[in-house]
Figure: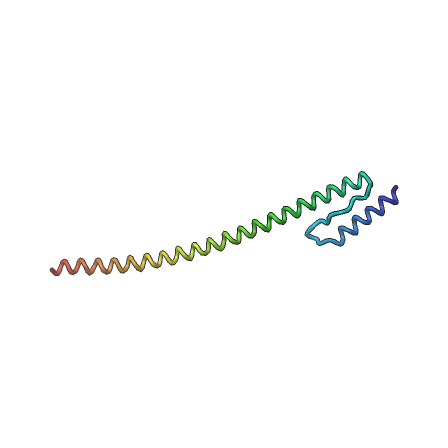
Length: 105
């Protein structure tokens, strides 16, 4: 039994060593009840990790989109502010001319 476990553990170690360090590979069951419980837990952890990574990537995309929209909003606000100031300056100069015309009359 110990020899069989050693062979199965070596297979698990080999499978884990070959994988991308950012994930946990799906491991095959061995037929040994206690080892299969460990393998089941590792497989479940790998699925949860993969799901968490997908969620993190989706959230990162949403943050990037929100930052871009915020930047566009700031640019739009700056343009609107400059436009408003130019219109206000023109209005003030025209109202000043109107007051002068009425005073000269």
